[in-house]
Image (cartoon, rainbow over all chains, first blue to last red; front, top):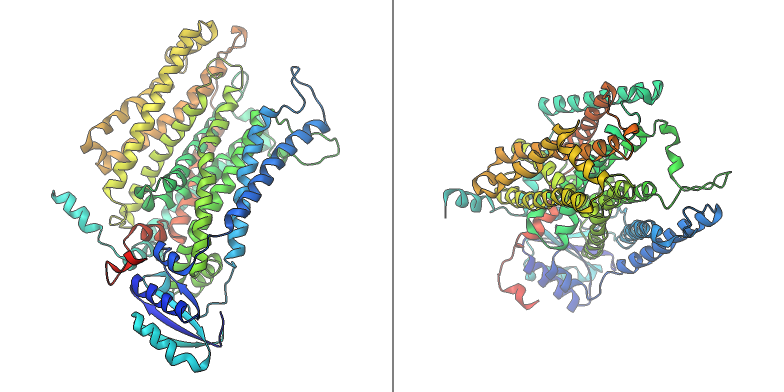
Length: 170
Length: 454
């Protein structure tokens, strides 16, 4: 977040929170929203792009599919043992291995991407976070310079913030 | 509106804060009852552990497994526990994709049940192989003899299916828990608890960017877990159906096993949810309508299972194959007929009572019926494994089974092991999904019309 100060607004209502976000966007200020629950309206107000997690999922799934088949086929070729005149690399029997590896690696890639994009674990950096944000309150934190404190605080109050506070160090 | 319906409507008036209050109250320091329950579970698991130790020290001879029934009680238990695991994924993943709202209050417990049931199921093949220290031979790893496992074997498919299932279920479970552990962290007053929750929540704060990635990933996890609902028990069924054994070699096995697994799993969710709801006063969140929805799922899957039983008999008769025909005469009238009739009563007849609404909305009746169904589903697996193996093609190799106390101890111990994890879980982590319940609630707004502009 840009700026040396963080102005924290605590909101009880979702529509007020969205107003605060739009006001920060209008003023081209850097902001951060905390909410106890994901919300479609909030997501619409804060972001225009879709999460890139899905690309990693596809990559993991394709790797799993090829890796699963490769594992079964290469292991069979490494120690060829013909059973009942069936092909050494009997693909239909290996579909299950390919299928399971697709899901396994797809899920692991999704998890890795989730942690990467969410920057998790993130145990110590909590600028402007308030424990009530996991309960029933919404928080909008706006980064600004010292000279903008009054202006930004007023924006949050105008949007309907119940409490506004100033934090140091971003 | 009836009085009950009015009371139900009243109960639904919970806000975000109330959800946190109700769920996080479950994590308050436990009373004597919890410790006694934990002691009972740990004690039972220890009995199972001692029985296993006896088997490891003295060899497989102490178990009843002998020719011709080489799969015995352990594989029955394996299939039973994998089946129990199943409905957790159905409730958490499939119903998530279908946006079924009734899943929200029950899914966390169902998913916990899945993870712990797979942990229990996974023990049985290892117990069954007799020399558990060689269990790693199942894994394809480079070795000096260049020997690889047989990828054409359904038993190896099962290794991949069950380990993938466990991993994906555990990931889905843990990812779902992260925001709720953060809520527990923010309420914790004890320093140790706060520290543990801070670490296990990975510092989750509910930033808007994180929610975006979280929702996308969660949907993808659900999409990955959904085919697993179909595949895991299909692969387990192929352990049987790929073998040329009368009573096993049938194409109906995969759907029959999947329906049976959901049937038993939903029953187990009811068995666990009813006492937990009562003890922790979860009535405002887990309401009668949720139990009724689960009862309807039981009615559906019971119908499918019954249809599969009838189809098995029909195809055996229609095939005109003497071995198949004998097998399906042996099941209801042979040495293990009690298991067959027990299974028929518990899985086909008893669930018919749910067509009567006052019974499917009666909590006590549902609790009893859920236990009856689980007994029935254990008997179903027993019936499949024991009857088919005891009467294969040649009468010279027919045989019975001598049950041993070691197998009994390990079977009971598995319930203790499963119960131990469930008991620990409900006291240390939110057993009801806080975030997901909030997601289906209307968000707090000052002006109802304001959101329409977005």
